[in-house]
Amino acid sequence: MSATPTNLLGLPRIALETFFEQMEEKSFRAEQTLKWIHQFGVMDFDAMTNLSRALREKLRTCAEVRAPKVLDDQTARDGTRKWLLEVDGSNGIETVFIPEPERGTLCVSSQVGCALNCSFCSTARQGFNRNLSAAEIVGQLWLADRLLSPPDKQAEPSPTRRTSAITNVVMMGMGEPLLNFDAVSSAMQLMLEDCAYNLARRRVTLSTAGVVPGIYRLAESCPVALAISLHATTDALRDQLVPINRKYPIAELLDACRAYAAATPKHHITFEYVMLDGVNDSDTDARRLRRLLSDIPAKVNLIPFNPFPHAPYQRSSHDRIARFREVLTAGGLIATTRRPRGDDIDAACGQLAGRVVPRGRNGRGRATVPAPSLSA
Image (cartoon, rainbow, N blue to C red):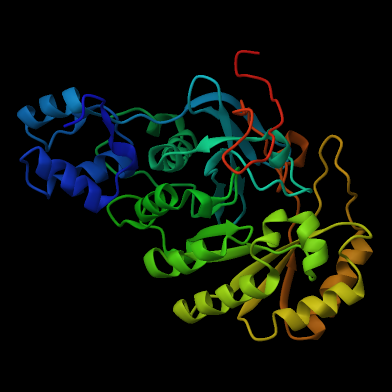
């Protein structure tokens, strides 16, 4: 076993079974431990009373259950709640909970910062430091699940599973999930695991800017709901808005979407489209979008642009967004307009920033932008 404690928070069932087998313990201990950690919210091995005393002593020497630390906790006027979480000594990520009458959605980050440099997104301005581990990703769900529980249910240990306020998880926070595939896949497996969070695949959504190889890989290994950050209908414009389009242009991206749709025949693919005044919001753009998606089981989510300091764009008017949606639906597309949530605490789509200490130049060759450290 490693001298560094293994954070069990990030191990899905198969990995946890292997962990116990390496300790010469029965693999069924994985199921027991998963329930204690994820369903009961227990961190202390001594509280895991159906594990033998000898096993609990061994776990204390080689393992831990460690979630990110809360540095800031804000609640918006509309009830949206945002946490700034410390993931190491110099970086922070943001996680957002969006309450609605029929569901509660948790928006989870996958990287510290983002390297894709989409021009309409505040996260891109923070630069990029590193990928999050599976424990840091699922730890956002673990922590939010506890913090959203009534005060009398937050104490540990708890002998019974809590009723969670979180019904949906979206990998739409800081970072590009498919550029951190292994950790994201492990975290989502835990979200789906019936001994952990037991979420249906349709209730876990991964949003990508268009990392085409990752879409094919996701279809094979963890086919959850898929959302595509499209935002433009021509390569020329998408190259500017979403620079990864230069590597994976629209035609290649839509081919991958068709393959994903074939692998998940009961699901629509969501295409996210930020509405930028005078940039991508014309009737011509809407008709072109309708043609592009004509043979894909698609629904379009129109996102009014959420401004941030020094943003180079303005939000399309309400009437323009309504007209754009009208053109889409006239052609048979399902189209909705996302209502901005939490914008008064910079928790809306495209506004997440966290606190990222860049590495000077990230692994993809783009100079990063300095950001304040957590001690500032």
